[in-house]
Length: 323
Image (tube, rainbow, N blue to C red; front, side):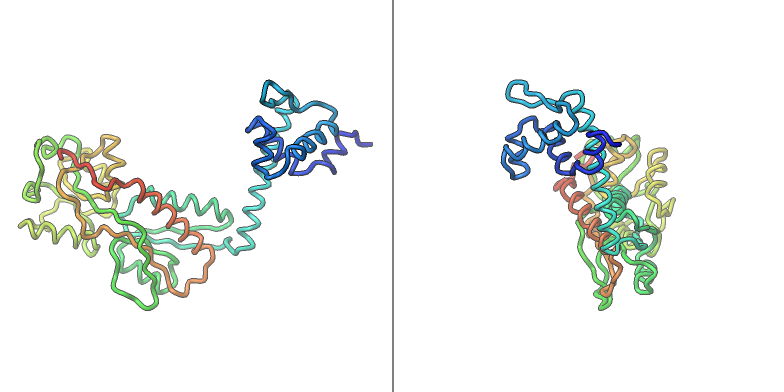
């Protein structure tokens, strides 16, 4: 035979009880709880009284103008938070399944994008669609666009917009130029004056892979300055490797502004006072016009949200080393 407490927990306890008590523990006043739930103070007090009568113990006590928890109340609130958290997870998971977000999404990106931008978007996607899976790859823009057309990829993130394509939608995400960087001990860092493209002459370069928009943009910049991109020491598509080389050697390279600031703050690289490479500043999301993968649309929304967050953090006027 069940005790009154067991009977209440098995059939009388409601989520409303838990929500009100948890809120009371946080807000500490019945009036604030009533306002938060848009109910009367009497309704809140009645719910708490029902709990106390059912278990035969006080859950709260008044101290001055505030309401505080008793020892039993603390246990109730601690376990109640766990229950409400699990209910929230259940609601999210069921909603994901009902919305069709339990499929597989394939995302591609060019190599000159901030890894933290992509990882944050993916992390938020996994939260919103916990039953979905994601496949990610990096590469050059044209092969990535081919994979999009062939339905091997659902979404592509790249720098600079391509020519208009009837079957592909191009969506602007944010603007972020690439900046010129060196290692923390490089001689250019200590010039004590604004630098120009001419100061880059005769240096050891790490350049983007041939065929990439960033390679083309940097090549055009150097050519205007009378420099030859083909004299570069290293050709690399890995930003992680580039940072390692910069931190240990006497190199110059370009990096996305947010990525450069992240590693400059750690003392691994220095940002030069040369104006940013602005010809490839636009970051674009590509998708097929007839994309029907619901999970892919959820990921696209997460990418947009992260792009908006990143935009708010990029300084309008970048502070360059030595400027």
